[in-house]
Amino acid sequence: MKATKSLLSAAVLAAAISLGVLGLPPATYAAPGAGVGIGQDTAADAQAKLNKSQFKGVKVAVDNGIATLTGTVSLYEYKKDAANRVRKAKGVAAVRNEIEVAGPGASDSDLKAKLLEKLTYDRVGYGNAFNAISLNVENGVVTLAGHARTDVDKDSALALVSTYPGVKDVVDEIEVDPTSIMDDQTRLAVARAIYAYPSLNKYAIDPAKPIRISVQNGHVELYGVVDSKADKDTANIRANGVAGVFSVKNYLQVAGQPSENEKPQ
View 1 (cartoon, one colour):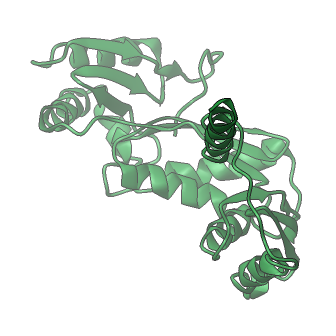
View 2 (cartoon, rainbow, N blue to C red):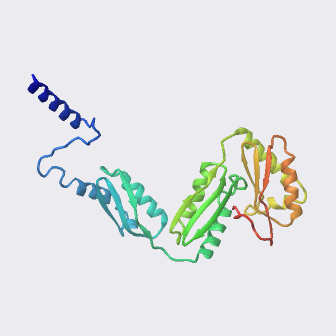
View 3 (cartoon, rainbow, N blue to C red):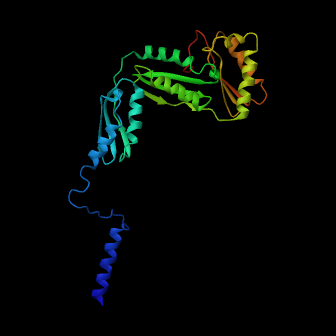
């Protein structure tokens, strides 16, 4: 009887181990040579996803389902696109993107100035004055922050920066304002209150230099550059006088004065 119980206990223990009950990984067995070439096949499939001229300097290696991309491309957009393409390869579970952007170099100050100019006119005619997106550049890495009225506005700004020569990487910190009919009505009401005022309607003339209005659940934020402190204060008073506005944060900068915040574009 004792021998039988001992054999049963041994069988139960073996079953527990095989099922991982004791926290140990179950043993797996494979015939000799099984799995050989799987990694190579995955790498080949992943490399085939990059059969475009812009990826000619990119190589793919795959280890345990993780694809590592190395080499160079001329635009950051190509680096991002390469990772997206390789993720679709059969057998790839994750991508480690070590591609370097080797396009034309530019100083951070020059790159920032050029991108700011592009960004100021982005989405003009589509509610551009309701976007308050800031931009900073450090060692070729562009950080976008601030507020966008819609996901389309955000995506447009990111695409503009990602496809610009000299950009090495892009950090996305843009917040999309909540979708709200009430907020949309508030935006228009605040815009009318500000731009209809005689001393402020000049800011509606140049689409690249408006007083920018961001609204989140009835809370208004003002951005941009104005000519005087009087204009800044007047815009604040006009926005506060709109029905349904819960609060106003006035981040307007006065031209020629030190900036406390990064100027949204």
